Image 1: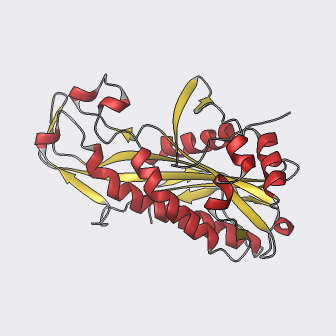
Image 2: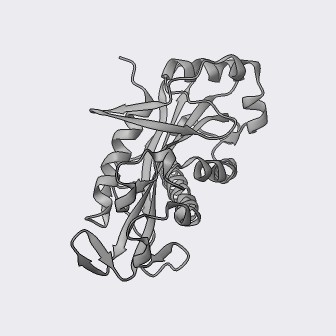
Length: 272
């Protein structure tokens, strides 16, 4: 039975996000890596990088029933676009495979001709709209991924899925639905990666989620009572990018540990 990597990744990410507000740990599962599929002599292509469209989190009263595109900063497109070069750079520096340059991927005839999948992930009863990193297409069908690997003449292809959330760290005094005083917010970033070989077999799958520590001044944002009717999502973008970078580092560290025969846990610390 064919299964979309998007469905797998969403289930993991959603579970992790459900736990961020109430526990320091998330159940993300163990890393699945076929060790003999990766060597420096083998070439892999990162062919799709996407994120959940909405920057999830506490909305102000004036934002409660608005569409994501009507709330400044709530659309994650700028975040995933800025993170994409970072993701590619970090993947290219791994010692376990050679990464095909983006220009050769998106500029190839095979990629240009490839029909993109609908930019929606279906998880249980939810439909999650997606943003696709600039220059890329959204590909979720394992057979499409496998064919693309063959067409690009690489050993396998990689897909990256991310999502971002604003979490309230500390609150002021509650008066009905309104919070008075200063509030601290932290961005959380979840990432799932899945790689397929030329036959459509999953050879790498893992997820992680990171959130800023209370003492992390670069990633913690303070807002006062003037923000009680709206959440300034745009103000959170730099911290989301910073935490997103850390999530990529953790993911690749787990990959390296697995390649070296070390065990990686299915429970992960959300905060550093």
